[in-house]
Length: 271
Image (cartoon, rainbow, N blue to C red):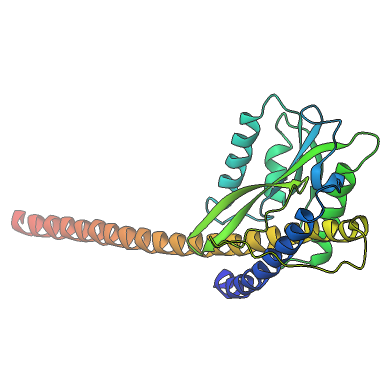
């Protein structure tokens, strides 16, 4: 009941956040296509570390259990991703206690963990900004820059369905600005009051923060949906177990009563 009450609010936040993320991606994609000569590391990566640098996998899991296969599917997706890229050097940034408790005992290097982010069922934009700024700092480090950052989280489809998503967070790449509809692109002319360096310097970090925030919103809604479904199934299973045990108890009691009656009747006949 608690998960069901929270799910509606979390679902509304996800639905409200999706158009903002899509529009921001579209606008930045338009700006990027009109500035082909501008090469920001957050946009195109570091030219000297391609294929050789350190990589980061950020995994968003829950802080609590009792939500069915929610955490198991995410961990399995992360393991398959790392297995397919076993020749590459990956470090983990774990967002959520369940992922941290699992991978801290595995032979994978954990660079950083962020715990108790989604445990209350709410997501704070300041927490998302903190996570994004730490990832941007890792990626932009002059001492040992990171080649790429990947993000794994559960996308909310419905209370019964959540889909693990793997997306490249950094470098952002030449953004396509896909709005989810197959339609011809309409070129829009913009008047820029700042040079590309100033625009991308402000907007690219905001885009990364928004993607982290959006992933956390999706994860919270998916977690609550999975928990509601799991608890509903557990309640139904418990009811079935109670009914079966009650029936068995009545049968045993009836058998004992019948046996006692037979003993009494047999004793009376013997007398």
